[in-house]
Image (cartoon, rainbow, N blue to C red; front, side):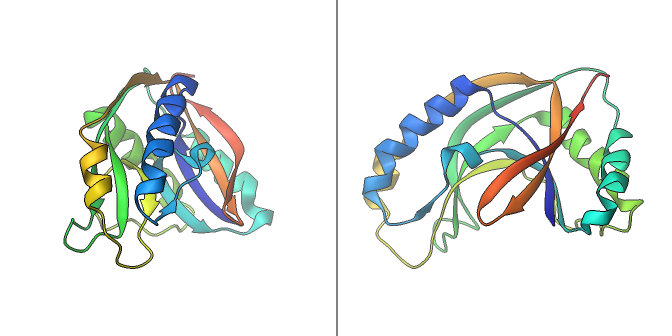
Length: 176
């Protein structure tokens, strides 16, 4: 089983992102993310044995947070940068509370032997992936500096990733 944890987006924000992506898709031949797969990853876990799924859920239940996390989604950019674009993303700003959730999630799963991520946590929404060099001028001009809004996340989820589809396995409230 390939697992990760993530915060979901509210329906209204998904609708805004859907309209934005529908406008941009014709402008560049990229591998566009399905709107229903958009989420804010807090920890990529990777392969995990199905027989130990309850261990994972129990570890994630230990992640405590006293209140919902305010998150805004705005702006777009490229990883690693525009000169070598691989990922087209929308910016996520959850400030210190979102980073703390990612850190607490990391600490919880580390007790099960999951390696600690060495990269700095950089929350974003992956909108598309670049397969090969394509002209991006039209996309850049049309994308602008979008603001998709803000919301309060009251929980995070354990997800299964299989065949390009994501399935929720468990929900963990931030203020149980």
